[in-house]
Structures are given as C-alpha cells and as structure tokens.
Amino acid sequence: MKNPFQPFPVTITKIIDETPTIKTFVLDLQGNKFSFDAGQFIQLTIPGVGEAPFTPSSSPFVKDTLEMTIMKVGRATSALFEMKPGDSLAVRGPFGKRYPIEEFEKREVLILGGGVGLAPLRSLFLALAENIKKYGKIYIKYGARTPADIVYKYLLPEWKTWKGVDIDLSVDVGDKTWKGKTGVVTVLLDDSLQNTQDIVAVVCGPPIMMKFGTLKLLEKGFDGKNIYLSMEKNMSCGIGQCGHCRCGKYFVCQDGPVLTWDQVKDIEDPF
Amino acid sequence: MSILFLNRYKFNQWLRKIHESYSVYYPDFLENKIHYRKLTPEFFSGTDNSMYKALQEIRPTQALKGFFFNPRLKVGGLNKDSKVNVKLDESPRVIIGAKNCDLRPLMVHQKMYLENEYGDAFYKSQLDRTIIIAADCPAPKDTCFCNLVGLKPYPEKGADIILTTLPNGYIFESATKKGEDFLRDNNHLFQEASSEDLSQRNEKRKQAMQSLEKINPSKLRDDLPKAIDEKTEANFWQEHADKCVECFGCLMVCPTCFCFLLYDTPTHKESFERHKIWDACYYAAYARVGGGMQDRAEFWKRFRNRFHCKFMHFKNKYDFYACSGCGRCYSVCMGKIDIRKVLEKV
Ligand code: SF4
Ligand code: SF4
Ligand code: FES
Image (spheres, chains in turn purple, brown):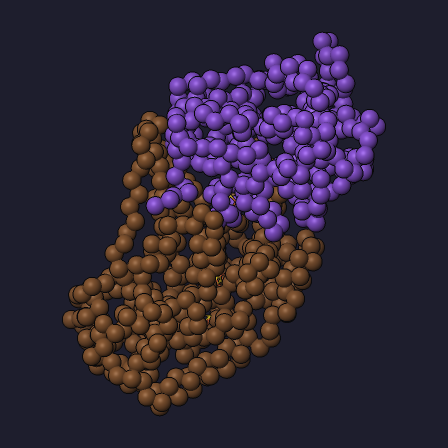
C-alpha cells in the first residue's frame, strides 16, 4: 500500500548557526529514494512533536543530503532547535509544484528575499546556477533586519564572483560595520532594472514584505504573471486533502506553494 | 439490476442470513432519535420491530461518514527507524439505513481523497469492504433541506442497494454490481417487485418531495457561489457569527466536512504514532502558521469560510454543493443558526 501519510527517517548530520534565530540543518537521507525540484516543499517530522512544512535550501541536483534553513518561530521549530547532530527526523514529500524554470530561459531573473525568505529561494538559485548560461542575468536582492540577521554570510561572497550573478543587500537598521544600503528591501528595486515587464521575479519573505515587494514590482512595470510568490499557509496533509492550506480557490500545498500574482490578486488578503 | 420484494415476515430471516458472513449495522431508536447499532444475536430473540419504524425516520444522528472517514485513525508513524504497522481492516460489513443526505457526502470525500493524485488507501479499503443499503425518507422533518441542494428524499447515487419500506414488506433495488450479487446470495427469500409495489413506492416518494417543498418553499438562488463571493461586508457575516457560541458542533456532525489533521503522539524516544483526526476550519489554530499569523484571525472570517468552502469553491470545482441538506448543523446549534436562512440572505 502506498501511504502518503507515512514519512521516512533521516538523520541530522550538521547544524549551521546562521543568525541568532536561524539555523541550517543538514540531513542525511539514509539512502531513501528522494528527489525534488526547486519550488517544491517537504513535510518535516520532529518525532513526537509533529510536522511542519519547509522548502529545501539545497540544490535539487544534490541527491543524498538535504539542507533546510529554518527560523525559530513556534512549537515545532523550537523543538527542532533543541536537536543535535545524530538525532533523527522524518520526511514526507516532495509536494507541490516546481518553478517552471524552462520558461525562465533567456530571461533575467530577480530573486527578492526578506529575512529567512532567502532560504527557499536558494534552491531555485542553485538550480538556475547549474545552467547559468541559459538565463539572462540573475539578481539576488536580499534584505534583513540587521547585519546580524543576514543568512548565508559565508556563501554570499562566493556567489558574487559567479558570472551572470548580481547580488545586492540591504538592512533595515545598520551598525558600525555596515557599509551597504539601509532601508527595507524594496530600496534595492532601483532604476537599474530595465525591461521589467519581461523579468521573472521570485519573492519570499515575511507577509508584509511580500505585500510591499509585490506592489513595488508592479509599480516598476513587472507583469503579474511573472511574479512568483511563495505562499505561507498552515499545512497538514501536503497533498490537497485536508483543507488546511486553503487560499481562495487554491490548496497551496497542491496548486502552490508558489503562486503567481495573477493567480492570487483577486483573493482578499492573500498573504 | 433488479428490483425485488421481501415480505415483512421474512426480513429477520434475511438479516440472520447476512449476519452469518457480515458485520451488520442498522438504524434503531435511542430515545427519539435514530442511531446506528451493531447487530448482535440478541436482536433475534426480541419480537420488537423497531427497525421497520426506524427505517422510515430521517437520517441517523451520526453521519455515515464516520464509517469511512473515521474520527481518529492510525495512519503511520515510526519506531525509531522502522515504520509503525498500520493494518487495514478488511472484514466485510453491511450498513443499513443511510439516507440520501448521507450519500452525497461520500461523493464529496471521493472527490477529495480518491480522485487525488495520492489517493487514500485507508478510505478506499473502508469503502471496498462495505455494502451500503440506503433507504427512502417517507417523512422529512423541518430540519431537512436536501431538495434545496439538488437532492431527492430517496437514495440516488452512492448506495449499493436502495431500500423502501412498504406496509407489507420492503423493496430492494440493486444499484451496483456489488449490491446485485449481494441480493442474489439470498435469492430464495425474494420475489420480483410487482408493478403495484412500484407504484406504492412512487406515491410515497412524491409525497415526501411535496412535504419537503412545503418545508422549504423558496429555492436557493442560481448564482449562489457568485453571490457568496461578492458578499464581502464584514457586517453580514458578523451578524450571524455573533450568535455562534463556538462549540463547533456543526462541523463535527457535518457529513460533508472533509478536513483533517495529521496528529502525532510520542510513543517513546524518537518514536511516534500518526493519526488522522477530524478537524474543522472554525478552530482558531486551523489556519495559523508557525509565527502565529493567519488570514482568518477574526471569527467571522472563519465562519464565512465554511460557506466559501461548501457553497462556492466546491461547487465551482465539482458542480455540486458540499452540503447535503441533512440539517444536522442546525439541529445541534445552540445559537439556532439555520444555514438555510444565512444562504437566503446572501
Ligand atoms: S435531508 Fe432529505 S435525505 Fe436527509 S433525512 Fe431529510 S428528507 Fe431524508
Ligand atoms: S452544512 Fe449542515 S446541512 Fe449541510 S451537510 Fe453539513 S451538517 Fe448537513
Ligand atoms: S495541506 Fe492539506 S490540503 Fe493542503
């Protein structure tokens, strides 16, 4: 019997401290058959506590491990933050739709992330970077609250050196060491972007950032069908049966988790 | 498919026969209401014929849904690294006495669980092991409104066998191959239904429909899904939601509600069992995400969601309402919220 509610066990091999409230968990898949496409998510079981949905941060091309960058926000993530390398978790999935990356070919891609929202976008970025010549320029525009809240500080300098990648950061509140831009992430959406109606924008961050980020993109001439939004909803089954992730006529677990602005614009309060 | 007649005095003989190979559930009175009971040998020692009467009442208090979509069912888990054993119960059973308003819900669940990429082997096995014998409703009550949501007061789709009580016996009509074979197992007890039996059945059905039309004279508007969508004023929903005492009984008795939660309980270190339990969209935690945010934080929005789900999204997608008019939600409501009245005013 195929049982979509049954997870398979995985082991934590490494935990990376990203910021005071964000950690990256590296999971060994213990030889279980598993692969995902950028955009899909998994249900992660913390044994005895329950499940929560997360989008992998690692490249879909990496097969035997899975990385997830997670912020401590509630019951499940607090329990997760107590765990150590060697501890067991369990995984179901992948679920949901992938980004239609073949449609991104020859076009510029703008990755707009806020806070821990860069985490799920990282797997898309790494997937695009694998065949970087196929795409136009890839912009990463990333905002965090303070310099200490920036994730992947140890990766960003290397990504910056990749040809075809343009990275720009901002923080809401700077400190003595901060030499970059300050202000909410939308300050990075400046006039250097040309032909905005054809640029693919992928957005992930806290609800307020998603809202104002989208409005700013539209104002800059981006097309609603090219704005991809990572929707955060309560999830239980992950397979379109339990009702929890309802967003207008969509079940975000099945129709999403990424929906375009054109899909959600008529929904009252989509974020 | 055949339409057979069973004499009243042969009914228990037939029951005894099927009880040899099946668990049998049948409708019976508990105080003034109808509940399912499991048939035991003691049943046959009594002389009381309350089942004959019970079959002519409206739907049982508890919905048929629970036989297939169980309130709580173990669906998985891990014992350290090995899977928790989940066994499917495959023993055959017969359920007698469901009404049409409990059959549409099965269609709703089949859309949600079976016509889904992943399916649900648990639900499927519960269906496969069951013969559903549904019965006509000769006497609808004032809580009934199956006619408003496009149903008749007698079984249409979803039963294996359709049962009608007549003064001197029962009509059994097979509606599926499974039902036909099941009836044929005891062929010797039945005879072909006569044209007189059938015209009696027709007459009873017509009367039942007429009384429903009296109970619910005004139809739901044709553009109901659109009207609900456009009803965005908080006031409208708030006014009804204010009468709600938030017991959420309406959602626990509703035969069409399909929401569930996967709920884990720790067994010992790193081990847990996973249950699929009924859930409902009125609960404050239902749509809440990790950080505590949700898009239906105000109760009136959760109240409205029930209408969006049953009368808009489901209807738009599958072309029938995810409500069967069984009236259970109104029967249990302490605030006396009548879903018909809300829909009328939309
Ligand atoms: S709502 Fe209709 S089908 Fe249900 S009990 Fe009443 S008359 Fe029968
Ligand atoms: S909403 Fe009320 S009337 Fe409709 S199916 Fe559910 S309990 Fe029955
Ligand atoms: S999480 Fe269950 S329907 Fe989407």
